[in-house]
Image 1 (cartoon, one colour):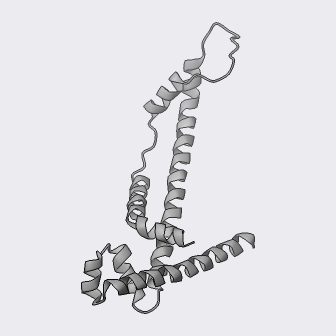
Image 2 (cartoon, rainbow, N blue to C red):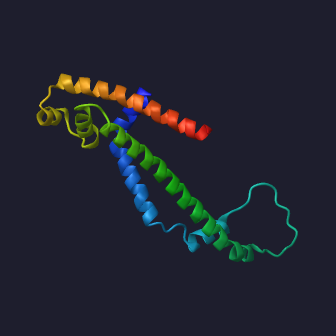
Image 3 (cartoon, rainbow, N blue to C red):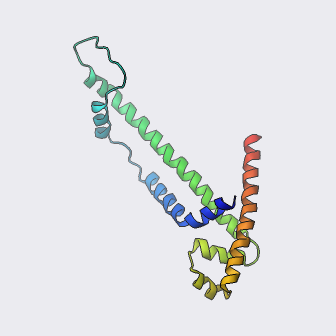
Length: 163
C-alpha cells in the first residue's frame, strides 16, 4: 500500500495535468468526422475468406447506409471512455487531497505544501520553520497515516461492492 501512496505523491502533478486534459477533451469533444469515418470504411478490408456472390460491388451503397450509424456509435463510445477515465482520475485525486487534509497536527500543512504546492525542502524549512530531519519524519508519518486511510477507503469500497 505504501508504494501506492508514494506513487500518487510523486505523480500528483502529472495526474492533475491528465485530469485537466481529459476535462478539456470532454468539454470540447468533436469526435470522428463523417469524412474520417467514410475514409476508414472505404479502405477497410474484412479479415478472413471472402466469397464473391456477384460481380456488382455494393461497397458504396453499404458505406452510404452505415457510415453515420458507425460514426455516432464510435463517438459515443469514445466520449464514454473519456468520461470514465476522467471520473476515475478525478475521484483518485479528490480522495488523495481529502486524505492529506485529514492528516494529524502539522502534517497536513507540510505535506500539502510538499505534494500539492510542490515546495522544495528549502521552502518547506523556511515556511514551516522546521528542519530537514523534521520534514523527513513528517513525510514518513504522513505515509503511515495515508496508508491507513487508503486501507479504510479500500475496505469501504469492497464492502459497498459486495453488499
